[in-house]
Length: 265
Length: 344
Image (cartoon, rainbow over all chains, first blue to last red; front, side, top):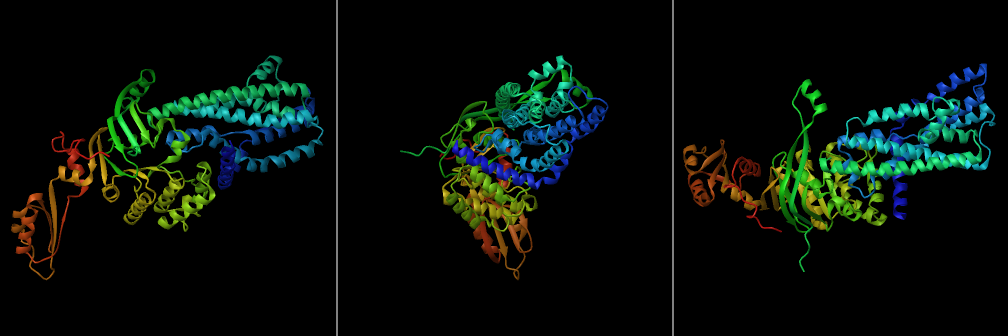
């Protein structure tokens, strides 16, 4: 365990150096994830006429700026990397190393966080300044839940990408599966529209599906739109998803590597 | 007690199931509904044993099963049947202790991080293989001695020449001190000088560390320079396992006499030379002839008697020709059988 921790620190350091080497590409990529700003403009204009449910214009500003920050800090692009590694055979090099490739991938993913934070932090400051700070969680329990939910959201994203990435072992269209996941997620995670605006039936469905726990739930916790009790219960659901998806990801990975080994990589 | 083999392979077979379809749109659409597969036997009942510290060359034409065998030995491909042990481990389990004791260098695939200097890959491998800092520094210094890494290891990998990159690939693969080293075409694409440097390095490394070395290469010079023992595979089957010289003599039991004449002397006498053997090359001051092994002595005597010889050498036919002949012969009548060569 100690060895893994030591190795992980180096993986993160080298991953950070790699992220720096790809900084231009990454900034462009991050700029493509600014959809919340479009939603912000749209919904603020709508709410200027009359509040939408509990949301006035400044609520939308806080919500979508928080959504932008959450997305920057929790997204994963593993499916592309895995697709490339599996199709081009470079997975062999990863399999030959005495560290599990999923652990290595996770470090590469997390190592890009400081760069992403460099974009997210100014956005967070803008959010605090423009909304006067009144729209963010103050209850220590909710603040704690918000922090834990960010880790949970990243894990759900990462594990889902690992599952979808493992499809590349079996089919040419793993990235198409990702597109389907992504489109569904845009709708059901609260990325385009806050989930509490949806009809009750849809809301009930999003409560049990994993999508909301990748974005809507952390954003609601950060913006203090939830109570401590509810937040803790939702955190429980989020981490159940983490465990379930973790199990599926490991099973999918193992099945994929068996196939890779059978077909020759 | 005898040392256990570094590599033990018994009745190894690997069959791939390959999707097959005819060209054209109709076949493409049909394959959506009914896919047809055929089975391809890449490795067929292969057995061999390699002692620690041995250097063995895997030879065979394209598609012979060399790379598949190497990948099975490295744990990347699961065998269809048979038993394999490498450094005391079953490769396909890919246990940490196994992965720490091997390295696979593929000339056409790289492990160096493309946009970072090789020193970053070295540091990464140090952490992944848990090499203590002092051991790492010492190994890096040794590798630098042999390969001259210092000048290049700080530049981003993408800016390195192919040769510089291969040096760094080798260093990255060896920093954890593998006991068994698999090399798949390590000199592919390199110029002659760099091929020589890599060969010399590998030999020095194996001598210094006692590592077992398995090499596949299309450059026969690599094999001649590095591997006293060769394993010839064709269509997945073992065709020969033994020393290189015996293989050469069995397949091509003749010798080449290369003669250089004095520049100021008379020109070579073609008719006289043709009487001695098959002429391979004939120029104003140089002649190469091929003669049966038992006729070498007489041929040399006659060449000295009839020509003003400045220099003369007797060699085995080039390995490329030996291999061409070996794979061209349909039956095993002329080729050595697997049992001919000494086993480790």
